Length: 99
Ligand SMILES: [Cu+2]
Image (tube, rainbow, N blue to C red):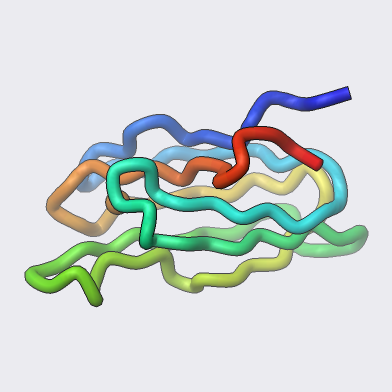
């Protein structure tokens, strides 16, 4: 049975959104307005129950990024996405559904 796609929705500059992850697996997320911003989230048993993925943008596109670009967490983990940039960003599952 499919679960809803992972999607923070728009994250305003200076704010943060928390998304709860479900079951084991590897998920590719991107920023909807800037789909070249990529994040790989791996959910494994025993992983951390919460973490932060920071969002940045900047004068050049090379500075638009998730940091870190790869995170490993446990099932049901809370991932907070603080947006340190000047623009709105999202963390959205790239293929639209969970595996
Ligand atoms: Cu973005």
